[in-house]
Length: 421
Image (cartoon, rainbow, N blue to C red; front, side, top):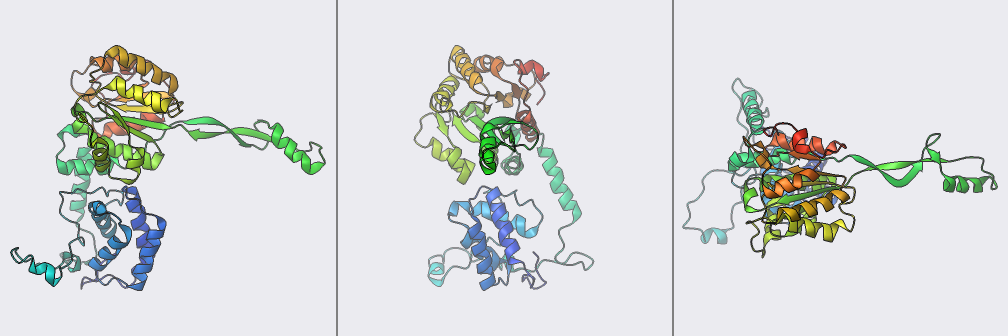
């Protein structure tokens, strides 16, 4: 998708491909866009072919969006997909960043302009309708920027891989959240009670063999064998959103949303209370979902009641089977107002239900760290793995720990030095 010298779209612009790609990118970015909206966008572009980039932008925005809060994410996705310089899934967007090309507002009607006479007029033409400047040496205007700029962009991202989330600026935080959104959390496989025909292998299936004998006059001419099917274990994520975790909460919520939409995980947040966020994270921006969950809750961003949160989770959801045989990941620094004995009791209950319990503590990467906090020391013996999760690289190691099926009763000693990720 490129521009000609006069700023218009190429004549052979593929509307169907663009509509399908935009819909896929928006879904990866967390905006619920059904395939029929992509079809309607393709029909609209076919009926009214866009002459310039701004026409394409406004047509796509009107057709695809249902909420004004989705505009910043849409702008970032549109720019990434149109320019072809960014991964379409890198579309969370930074609200403080300059607007993407093509997302500038249209000229106001005369009545609207009359009410804004006191404001300075903008004499710049719409950047969406500007022709792309030619590169030195007479190269084609549709070529991407210089390779040095692309390499600089990649180098910046590599630098962010190991940087502590607590040390990120707002711009760096937005880039890291784009990276974290692409992490895929996958749990080990388990055998289910359902079976399927297995040819000559597997155990004899009496029921299927009896049904097959009906077709041969009741004679068991064919013996059917079956094997048990496999499925991924359920993934349950519990994230501490108390005041001591503020520097890491936004990144972790992005990871939770990727797991909810990509791995059908169950997501919970806790501080002084426990709230289920699975439904909200499936359709909303993580920050919006957390804001709605904390509305009207006293002390949401203050202390932590770790034992109380685990008890509510186990009583309300664990007994219904949500934690049974699942891989449970807890994001917390282990600082709690509860008695360590209560934390010990609830963690023992959780271990009996879950297949594995993985603890993510961003303080683990600090020099000289030792799990001496009351809640952390009480919970650690019941964990199968103990990772830091303080950086993007550490979170990728969490993905590796999830895929493993072995367990360990001493995760701190198993992972070696406390300075590791």
